[in-house]
Image (cartoon, rainbow, N blue to C red; front, side, top):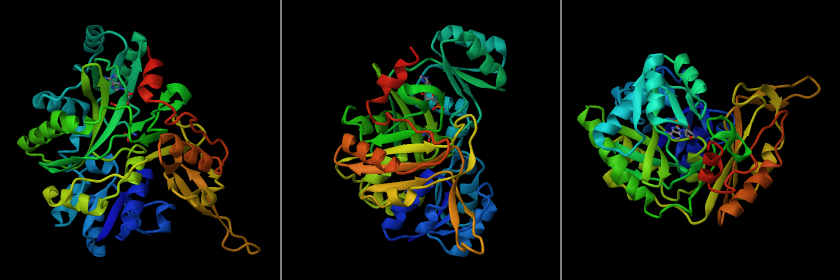
Length: 428
Ligand code: AMP
Ligand code: GLY
């Protein structure tokens, strides 16, 4: 197949890499320097549906995959679908499952999906009442898209109130106590297959300390989780949600990212996202043995029943994110990166690009001299496969040790122990 992947980050790199390894002809728009090594890049405004639809038409692709949430929430998938091209990614209406926390809570409630109790608040009085109803630890979420950074979890009531006051509309929730898990469901509007669960380490520092990030590392599978977790989540969460979305005239086609807390009362939904997780989908994709292209094309064309359930290899995969100075509050651009080639050449290791750029430092004496530099908060992710988690983890860190740039930040405890133990504990 000829496939266009829209986006610039690690998720798009991991998707494009797997698709290319399967023998597909891959284009990425705008892509990144890592993707450029095996695919053709085209420049595009990822927020413009007409631009992406016309690029897809010009390239004659069989399938468009929209990676990030912002273009999905802006309706980019609708424009591609309206042009008669198969697209993996929800419509603007269905992307509201991520675009509005209040909408997703409403769908969950109508569908009977297990999740934290919640209240929507638009005034300080409403916020205070909801905080007191649920008690500490307090969970306050900005209703708008905030790239994983709009959520405050705290025991400090004043901090919770201040966050509510800083947002136009918040969702205040009951605190869910249990390890967090990411489960990706590939949906065709009415049917779904689950991929193997993963765990994402969201805080910037070791031991679950510091601010929330987009994710500092991840691993899969989860040997400590109940073996039928994916089936339970399909039954209690994904299928009822798909049915409810169809009923609302907004069938969900794409990756429904189910962020779960495994509580004493069973798995409960923390959040829905309308796309693959980053970096949490990276280890999952590394272990996917069956065809990703066929799976996503079948979902995009409403024909998931024509492909087999996804198959995963034995063993495990671990991804460690390398972030730039200042992340997550800010980021540092232009720091020269070394060692990527060496790390990438190790067997079963992939260096995934997330925020990199190439600068031309050629001089008459030294033509064709180009540097890879940092260009964002999360810069690279080093992903390894191994025969078990410990093996994958030590391979990922050995490869990551070869890479350096000024101000590099990384956690040293990715996949060292289940995250619920480490990160949940820091809040209590
Ligand atoms: P979200 O953007 O909804 O994923 O929230 C970001 C992070 O805040 C999650 O990954 C959790 O670690 C934490 N969080 C969100 N909601 C809750 C909740 N109801 N109970 C406990 N932790 C939560
Ligand atoms: N890693 C969390 C996310 O993709 O939202």
